[in-house]
Image (cartoon, rainbow, N blue to C red; front, top):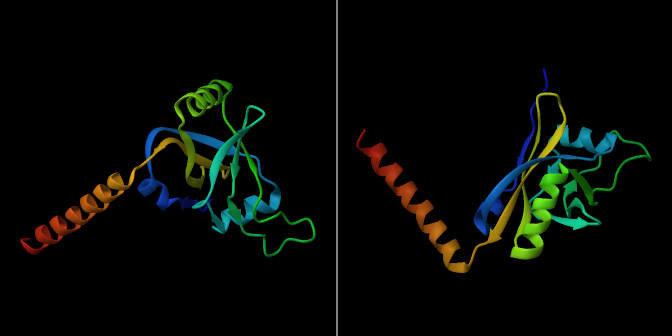
Length: 151
């Protein structure tokens, strides 16, 4: 029985509007996957970028494995993402032509125990869109409160 890991990028939903979502594999070393399985990772400040037609996750933080030796990994480094060629071409075209960005949403382990990253093709929100998001969230909270009172 494997413990599932689910590390979220909560800021992404507030900052960006998602257009398409993809699930990508990650190239990791042994100590990196051990740290992820312990839940010691952070993808809040990370983003994805193309280098030589390959997609990399940049600025992600995976804590060093506490039981690691001198072969331990660096906490912040570029990590290659694994997608189909068709998906990579589509993403590259969207990023270059439309000025969109690729944002990591969720780092998780699947049923086989492999680390996967859910990424989204996203468009940045303007300030008034962010205010509207806050207003909608507060309205929902107050509605839930009222419903709870009348039950």
